[in-house]
Each structure stands twice: as C-alpha cells, then as structure tokens.
Image (cartoon, rainbow, N blue to C red; front, side):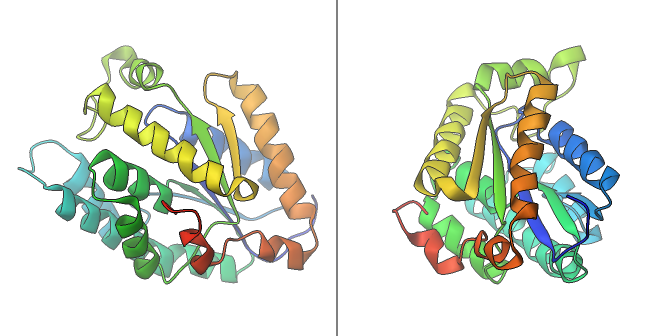
Length: 233
C-alpha cells in the first residue's frame, strides 16, 4: 500500500459501544502513514446541517420523535453527507472512512423501530443516489457489553443509546443479517477482541482491497440494485 489511487469508501458499523470510532482512527493513522489521503467522517453529521440534525435526533429534551420522523432525519443528514462530503472526497481519490452509514438506519429504524428494513433501505438509497461502500467493517458487540462501555466513567447515554437492551439486540441481529446476505462486502469482527488485534485485522482486509486492481476495487462496491437481493437487503 503505497500510492494514491481512485477513491475508496469504507463504512464502520455496529451497535453503540462497539468501538467504531477507535478503529476508524487507528485505520486512518495506518493508511496516512503509508501515504494515503484519508477523510474521517461520521453519521449523523459530517456537514453543518448534519451536525444540527444529529443534535436534534440524539440529544434528550427535544420532545417526542416518532419512528418515521427519526428515520427521515437520519436520511436527510445522510443525503447531505453523501452529496457534500463523501462523493467529492472519492472524486479526489481519497479514502473515506465513515462512522455509520445506511446499514445503521436499516438496523436502528428498520429493525429496532420496526419500520421495515426494505422500506428504510429504499429511502436511504434514494437519499444517497445509490452510493454504497466498497467495504463495511461490522464490529459485533453484545448489547450488555456495549452499555458497559458507553457508561464507563458514568458517561451519559444519548437518546438511542438509552433504549432497552431488547432494542439493541434487534439491532445486533439486523446487522449480522445484513452481513450474512453479502459476506464479500463485509468484514465482521467480534468487538470484544483486543484493540490491536482488531486494528490489525481491519488493516489487512483494507490492504487487500487497496492492492486489488482498480477494476476489482470498483466492483467491490455493491451495485444499488444488488442491495435488494436476499430479502431484508
């Protein structure tokens, strides 16, 4: 891994407390040390309007937010993110690492809020004009472990984090189901593994993706139409 090439899009997914931010930071540092230009970003957020929507949907004290409104807020933030941040960076040949993407809405609102995974995915594919990651790194975390990590040091949980373990179990099952239907597009790792171990495995997989011929790397990004193969996708 030495030379800049066409843009590559990698999403980090998993339940709250899985360690996505930590692993995205470790991967970014490793890739930058090899001469790549890396853009780290997050959802909801990543743009000025996205950050405002993030506060609206995650902070406590904004009144009742029903499931459909919640899904639409996330989709609106993602639309701005894809158009204003991710696509331009890919066009510049950068490696984009995002902390959450469409799978989070499919899991949280589609499964967790019982809006239907197909409906939520279709909404977000429309919002992003079909932009899909080349690779999704799924850090699989047990809901109880995730809560323990989130509340370490008595940190406050946001509006979604504070939902019951049953909600987070549905989300975990949805993430694993998404990965099982398209295993070639995912790297699934147990979140309880040591940080260095996880970082090494992620770097190995991303290195293989970056070392692939450009045509193969491009093919690694699932075509939007393929996302509906296998039911929930």
